[in-house]
Image 1: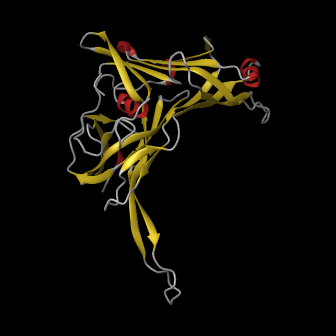
Image 2: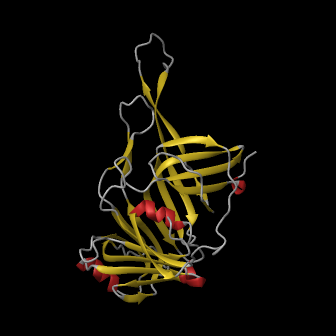
Image 3: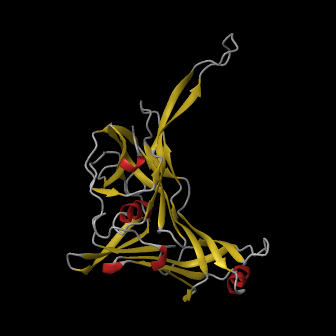
Length: 318
């Protein structure tokens, strides 16, 4: 009998897309639904009977989502695969590093647009599932009162297989993730206390698996369907008309989110040019007025990016 609480998820970076590697780190997650999906196709219609004719098994696509609290250590793997570019500097020699993630301007490899990773998913049923050649297609972050900073990673893989399970070792420092009570937000260069919930699609790579006639039922490569997208949405106390007027005038503003933990662990999210795309302000009843908003982060020529994420922790080899 399998139990979710007895499962675990391991991760490791690959050198060659689709060549699996053993897990080096482990993620404490909330849910996942990774797995192969078998496409099917019909080969006959006129069969002389009312019963449905047999079909054929087609391409195997391996993809899914994982939702997890943002631990200052584990999130770096998903940021690197989602963004594609990582640089860094030493904050404290041998113990503290600043990892800077920015959007890719070139492909990681001919068959893998983003840096690839292998996941080991043990579901408490005999052996582990191994998913290789993983690219983060979309990475979203959500925060609200009484909640951790929560990530959802949508991933596309090349292959899946069954392997003997490993022995997980979860992050020991820090034990807990970033949480709502360490979050501060500034809009247009000024601290804001009005934002009550926030969801950021920190990057949508718009990826898809490509099949070819190569005597295989697996995808042959991953490609982009469009440019990288950065979106955000949330709720904001409708205490004044400032942000509504910024929506009407389409004023571009810098959104800056800061999360901290003890021992100098830190996550900074910087969107230099954000414009509201929706700001409904209707009254639904007698309740306190809260406006929902949506926005898009535009490319900033000065920094050569639409978003930058800085992660300060004790690890630099993502």
